[in-house]
Every structure is written in C-alpha cells, then in structure tokens.
Amino acid sequence: MEESISLLKKIKDCFECKEQDINSYSPLTLAYIGDDVYDLIVRTVVVERGNRAANALHKTTSNLVKAQTQAQLVEAIMEMLSDQEKSVYRRGRNAKSYTSAKNASIGDYRKATGLEALLGYLYLTDRMDRVLELMKEGFALLQLEI
Image 1 (cartoon, rainbow, N blue to C red):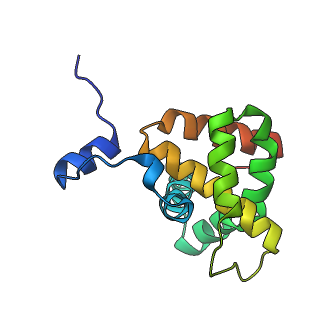
Image 2 (tube, rainbow, N blue to C red):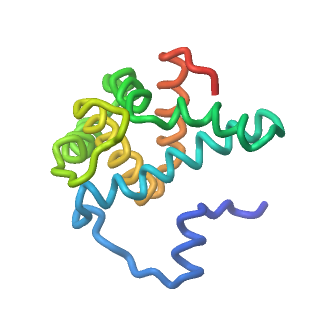
C-alpha cells in the first residue's frame, strides 16, 4: 500500500524548502499562511457540496471566512486546545497588526488573527488532521452549515 504524503511535504520537496524552526516564525507569519489554510478548507467543502455559479459559491463562503465567524469559532473550540495551541493562539491574537478588517470589530479581528496563527502553526507542523478536527468541531458547535 502506498504511503500518503502530505501536501506540505510535497510542496517542500518540490521547491526544495529548507527546514525552519517553527518557533522562529512571527505570529503574523503564521496567521498569513493560516488564513489561506482556513480559506482553502472552507472553499473546498463548499465546492464539494455541489457545483454552483461562482457568485453562489462566494455568497456561501463569505459568511464563513469573515473575522466575526472565525472569532466565534475559536471561542467555541477554546476548551479543546492544548496548552501549546492556546499559547500560539494568544501570540497571534496579541500580535500588533498594521491592518484591520473592514467589517469587523478590533476584538473579532484579533481573535481571528489568533485562530489563523494557530492554523498556520498546525499546518506548518504537518498536523492537518488536527486543523480539520478543530474546524469541523467548531462549525458543529456553532451550528454553521458548511
């Protein structure tokens, strides 16, 4: 049986990326990649739920990827997080960002940044199973259709 290789490993191998110390990444760097991890998962699920016009896909996705929803999601899963995961989340939440969301409170934006930092950390440590577990449980707790 063929061993499954993660997307992260394939990307690193293909582009000959050197190993990095995950603890050397700034929380905003983790949030930068974590934002796309979150977005890719949401968009993948939305697309896999049915072929629709791009506008319909966007409407379904936009409610799930906004800072307010991400803030609610991280609040819902907080008790599931390990001490290490909480530490990464707090670093992301407390990071000084020079941008802000157009339609979100500062509190929600910071919580969303913390969640994205956590997802980026988990992705870069090749723990996508944990990312999926947290997102699935969070959406279920919030009773959000995805």
